[in-house]
Amino acid sequence: MDADSNHPEEPPGTAGADGAAARAGGPGDHADGPDTPVRARAATLLRRPKLWLVPTVLTGLLALLLSLLYMGGIVNPNGHLRRLPIGLVDEDTGKPPPGQRQNAGAQVTAAIAASDTSGAAGWRRLTSAQAQDELSSGKIYGALVVPRNFTDSLTALTTANATVRPTMTVLTNPGMGSLGSSLASRITTAAAQQASTTIGRQLTASPVTAKADATTRLLLADPVQIVTRVGHPIGAHSGLGLSAFYYTLLLVLAGFLGGNLIGTGVDTALGYADTEIGPWHTRRPTVPISRTQTLLLKMVMTAGITVLTVSLVMLATVAILGMDATHLPLLWLYSYCASLAVGLGVQAINAAFGGIGQLVSMFVFIVLGLPSSGATVPLQAVPGFYRFLSIFEPMRQLSDGVRAILFFDARADAGLGRAWLMIAVGTVLALVFGFAMTRYYDRKGLDRLTPQPPAHPASRPAAST
Image (cartoon, rainbow, N blue to C red):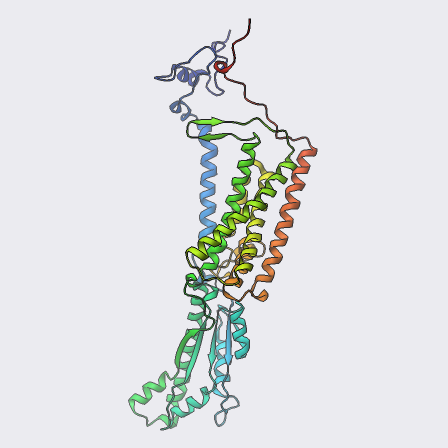
């Protein structure tokens, strides 16, 4: 007879030396009776390499992926910057100087547009009205404006009638995020400074200014004054343009966490998951129900409970914290639909992938979504991989809509129209994918029904005689 045949209740994997060590026990490890299983000890199990393998590999892989994905989008925005949309406006109405075909404003703007060999700026030649419209719709990150009297002011500098120093105006767009607006401001300021230096060399080399005094020549060497002002103002309680991103993140987290909590709560109530609070452990009787009906139940509950979560998010951010927000009814409706789309997606993924569904949905909605949202770092300043993700990643679509409502008067062309479309597409995909997978599992007979654990011998009623 096998040496361990007297221990039928021994846990798997504790045979031999490990099993003997487990049976040796210690204080509190003795068996309570003939039907009580022998309890393993942590010190014994820690010596099993297989116990370490899976969690070590998965944890290390997860840490590596998170580091690469999160940091990869922000470590070098200047190096990845490509064609950041910036307006270039020439309002100069002065006459061309003698012997030249264009006035100073036309020459400066043409030189700026042609001089950007790095491709960092995507200059757009616009009228003043067009530039203001694109600033107000979030299509450009800033603008450089040459004023109406630019040529006349430059010409006057070489005469005794100089009264106004030529200026060029840098317009910022803080609604596009502090980093994006800062990048645009840096590019436009550098371009204006380069133009001023070029004009200065021409003026100081002119025979007209050859006899000018030292103070005048110093002024002529850098004649253009650069003025910076906000092109499209936003409220003081807007987080320097970042409130749209963080509000979007709240909506995504509310949908993601809410979907997982609802799923776990339903599984617990139906007897497919255990409840463990501190030392207390319970499991309800299993309710016979198909996967499809379970998913339907979870999705309907998600639709109902999301009303509460979105209302509380708006109450906290707008009413309590005082976040600047306009179009409140539209913001609430948009927030509900956005968070609901995320919640339904979480339910569909969890139903399809089971236990690893939460990890999959975390990557879909959060890990890949944050660096490709374009809300903190402009998409023009991230590697191409993230620009590809931004085509379909939910957080980018949702942040564009929130930003349009909060900062750009809820204009459809500011990203709100596309955001509504992508919410609808995401909702349909979640419903189709989720129910297609559960119907497939049901047709294959892959039920979730599990046998109930037997009652402990000590809790069984005594046999009648």
